[in-house]
Image (tube, rainbow, N blue to C red; front, side, top):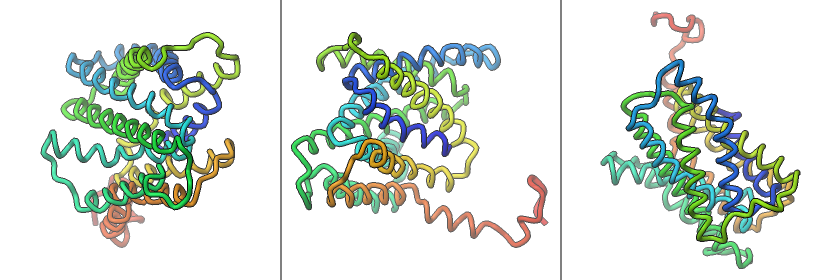
Length: 305
């Protein structure tokens, strides 16, 4: 899970280093990843059987949202920076509970209601809407695109969650279908945003794009999908905070991106809202309270004394 979060954080850096326009980057990221995922998905199919028709449809629908996420997020990276855009995309932790409330009528927790205003204020500071210092003309547009990416990300997670709720059908096949769907979606959107520009991409840019596809799409999602099943909710929620923090640090160290005072405060509020929405501290208290003296002396899987 930690390695998956690190790969996602590195993705934003690779996008900036590649220097290719948003639509082309999104399409190539997914297309290259599909080439790597297809043989893995076929191997999973031979061992565990193929996806059901419903599983394929859910994965395709999720991929449409993922394609929108990738194009908007990549464009946001060029406007507000790799670190800030990765912070903004984490509004998905707000989008997912909202969709669960509206569609599945799941109850909204008190921590979600606390996190929502923190997230909105933080986003406003990052984008210069609520400003302490000048952030530049592109900040508002970059923030809006980052929010659109976060909504797409949240929809992707929601549809993936619904598609795997009734029956676990593996991780490779759904990811392959969703990635292929994201590639097609990105290619369609590209026709309305200036088209694809596949010529003139230098060898160094191709190297970064291939690394983006393999690390940011294949490796990251496989690690996260597998890791989230094996970890307790406390650890999963805590590791979710690592991605935006790592992105800010890496963007400063590698790309030299500097935040204004308002953006730094806003980014901190967004990270805090993510922590509150995931109930990190509350979950930790529950984990410690659930431990009984002598637990560490019992072998794993042994019955309580």
